[in-house]
Image (cartoon, rainbow, N blue to C red; front, side, top):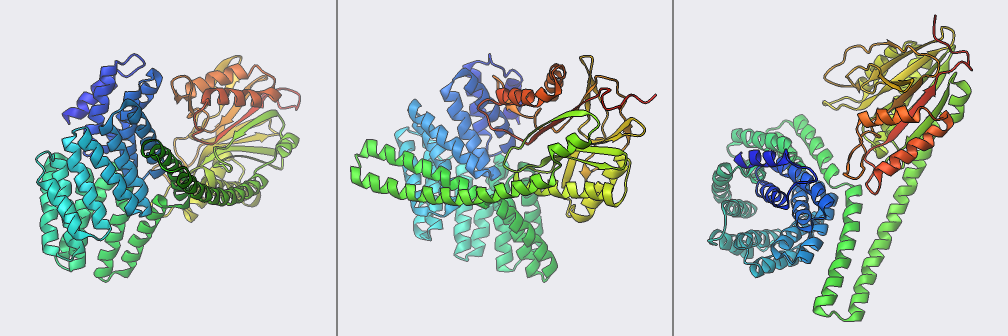
Length: 605
């Protein structure tokens, strides 16, 4: 706890002028607490990464990347963990820091080869890490490598060799408490696999005794889970299983440990099956299957394979430099990798083609620019830039009798899941207005929310959207709207007017009060903007920070002076300049309307 408080004091001073010494101190503390406070470790390493980039401080960047890679591995973000750890390895090699290089290589071995089940290659990396730690006299790290080598032998089925390495770690005078706890834990798994249940429980409790004293939460979760698995398989003390699984489940949720959650769900399923409750067993198995698929999905597989290809090429080049691999042998290896890479590219192309086809379907459902231009009583522009080929954001409009409706919304998620949600949301808007004859914007959103909750919001899921629905009444010359979180903005005589919005989603949420209907009071020359949060949430600029709503409103005030047919391109340029080389983080949509007299829409007297 003292370490975390010290880190927060340092973090309060983080800015461009932070000293090199404080970056080093913060990085060291973040690395030290990674096993006991994963989320805090990640937060502070994320800060030092940004500051190190700004200051061009390679050592600080390498150490922050190492910690981020470790945290992302345990968060289940495997592709990003690999990217961070690979970059860290390159920097540590440039810095001639063998201990840091070994730490980063260990993460690569754990993520890449454990994920793909290539234990031969994993053992090779374990042994390389051990040699680097011996060369750098890293006594603490040597004990860690002894554990990792034992784990690999255990997964290869060589229990005798595995036990030798775990015992070697326990007898190592340089082994700190965390590695001794891990060695006892691993011996427990070894006994469990040999069906020596009594010995397994004894070893696991030895591990728990140490992890509780050290606040080693990551290992505590796994140990409680394995105790539960032993009790389930041995069919004894089943009443104690809930106790251990509940502890593991609560800690996994609190620490964001996706890698452990799917295993815990499976253990619950096995327990319920053992107790004869097949219905509950199936429910827990569905949770396990969903969590497992999130970790080991096709997208992650593709990313992992691409990163692995890059890393294998890097390893081959390094071996060619230091070990003088024969030229022809190296060419054959590279050719094999290129064959794999081309196969991945081919599969990726097929997936991309499918997503592009989905994009055409989505665009067919969204309202066309020409439809809005033909039916809208005011001049307008649309800036629409999905993060991926398909989008969770959407703009939509329809005319019903003497009323013109326009919606700008942000569905749950982005990419393919977000696109499916947007199609559903559009269909419910259409149904509310054109089939159920709902007139007021608030009643329309109430109806859409009801339909979403009825059909999607099961087991506390909160699928839906945020957004604004605006209604222009031709006959009454009146504008009304209803809004979920995203309030419209009016620019009037260079002044920014932020309108009201209800702080609840269009979907299942903590608050489900009826939506309010707001009157939008306008005057000639007003510029009205409807938008999602993607523009303001974009990281960029010289410091890599979010743009934020305040700055977006200022940009709107400046852009409102321009002719309306030029504003879309202006926002596009501003966005791209701000984003720079960084990745787009979310879908982006802005729709703007200019109020004038040309279409006979004047302020209601």
